[in-house]
Length: 97
Image (tube, rainbow, N blue to C red; front, side):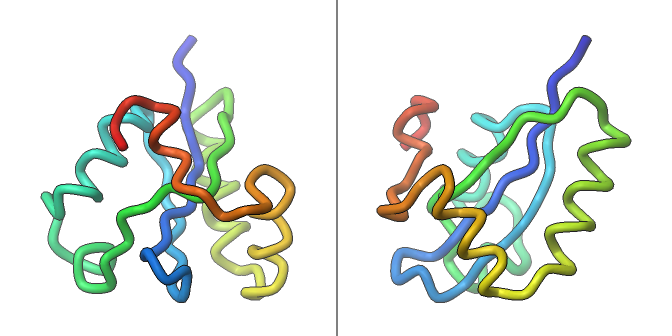
């Protein structure tokens, strides 16, 4: 069984949030940090992992990603606080920070 991840990236000043999903969190975070993929996260320098959760299926991961994207900024901030109240870059725990 594969594991999928829903994650939130932010810029160093924590003014921008990006929500995504992947089947390889370490690889995807490394791509964001190296600006390998051009687009929103590259443009807004979203290089720091501030939240993630594992999800058992791709279908559930896509649904959860869509759910979080609809949330207000304050609700997203509250979610981040449950795992990471100091808003640290969690990618250091993955070995890609």
